[in-house]
View 1 (cartoon, chains in turn blue, purple):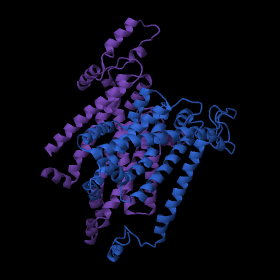
View 2: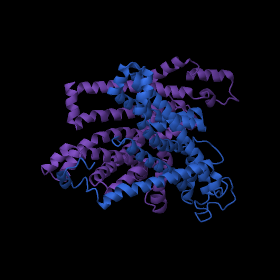
View 3: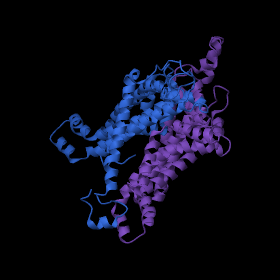
View 4: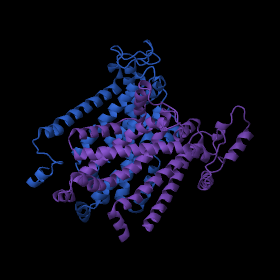
Length: 299
Length: 311
């Protein structure tokens, strides 16, 4: 970046770039973002551990109703207790598994289907491209959560159906990203070169097109993980979640809504958990995008 | 210009028709027999069930059901609610204004906060205002709307007692729901405007303008912002659709009347015509908004206008 700047530009552009050695700039560029990334990484790691072995983290059993009803947060119960006398912290820890699973599974499934459609549309082109992209356009007219709501309601509340609903609403995004990436790679000279020496089409696709175009999909999947967790928790907030003994975050938040005036902590902490997880995932996604493709626009 | 509008209108109609097919297919896949959910299977006789199926048309094959359905929908007949025989269209008409008002207000909040903070943050890059704007952006895209709604209720209704936590009468009840949706929306807009502003600021015509001594204010707001707004406008178009859908959740949080509430109630009771009607309605609104956004490019950006004229 500094190579491009001329002496003149440095003196005139007082609003844009500052001298590279400025302490403020050093602070802004180096330490704060890195600290944020470490923080985000630790939060994600902690929540993953909570999802895998909740028993190690939670101080009490999530189904134990032996404590004071709706006790305010204290040392014994950092997130307070709920209307059944359960320890909210333990419930949140145990609920992380479903919230994480919905997010990760939807990204994998949606990314796979969307990526496949996008690759097909971009690489084959012609009628196939037009048909797929028209369908994607139609899918996009129905906003994600409405589509997910309709599907979740149509197929009934189950973990798999929520994953299906959330991933289907994410398909258009993945398909469009991979398609546009493949279109721009397809026209590059090295593809023409490969074709000119007689490489079969599928081999060009697997060897040359795909390795050069999947990285934006990875960035999108990371940011999409945050969105999927949000949509999934929104569905369970609306009551389309899985009715279980241990509620996931969206369900717990929705159940605590009736007690806002007397026990604010029941709804606040699950929401905080969702926000922290999604925030960390988004921070990671931002960093990943800056690393992989600094010029990629944020959309 | 005329040709552009006609082409855009035709593709929009095609997309709306596609949405009609999609909505029908989703609802067709719904398990369970609507006739059985209206009549009590334990008391109704087989003849009654068959008769109701015939009346509902659910005994016909798939393509005939779709043909009937598409004909009715395109004639403006959205059917009747299975629960109380209320025509779906009139149900939508009575509840749509509240939802559209909420969606419009929150889009406005998102656009104003987002563009304002985004521009400030790009101008004062790496200063405190930039850090604030980036935090707003990050929190905005990471917070579930229902949680920001609940935090707002806790602060302004429970603790301070300034604004009502629920209901749908008067402007006071609009403030909190619109804010909680608007904050989330502004997160997307801030990030986008900041980035496209940073890109524009680095272009050569900005250097030229500065070199000829134009005041910073004019350079930024008259020249840089106008160029940076084009991508922002696109996202605001998409966003208004997402915010429309976000009203489903927010209307539940704040117990507001609106089409979001209709659909979540209808989903619980499997009221098919209502579900189809509301989803189709929101698809039409979404297509309309995005068509307007597309057409407004040529008004904002003379380059687009010239490109269209040449074609």
